[in-house]
Length: 236
Image (cartoon, rainbow, N blue to C red; front, top):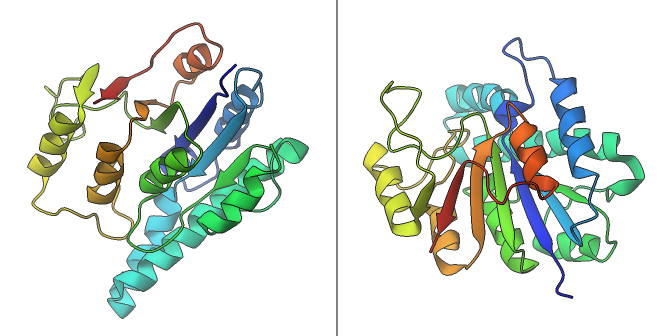
């Protein structure tokens, strides 16, 4: 039987309340769903930096105007966020946070759940998730964020934004670059996809689902095989 490998990208926005407190209940709920892993041979979780990372990044940007340094701070925070999942999953998780693809390749031999943050400046954690998915030949990537999926325009700015249940890679590129003239997000800027992640997505045959992590009932149904999709499905 073919092995089933999966990568889950968890947006940092899901891990903190507006008061900047860790949303412990959310971390626990996510872990309790994922650790029921009977259907998957390999599970990798990639965690974003969220609002805490952006606080650090804004301070560094203001006082140094050094985007690379700001990126490095964001990466470190994403790795600290990843450690929350390691601490809760205990022996189910690989104990170290891989900081390179080479370190990940060693961790992958453990057959435990691997949790990661960012890897290098200029690369979003979504790009990390897609790159890792390519490396382990994952069947699919699940991106959990604070919205229901991909919309035809920014749902935070436009009340008439429409959720797209299906979208191909060309249409996705058009929507992303229609929102901004920039092809690459600045350090700490939150976009589900940027130019790097789009390029990885285009060259791969990975099935990508983008859905909400606020209410985990849909993700739980997907994980347990009760439904075959959540949010927006990105296809070739």
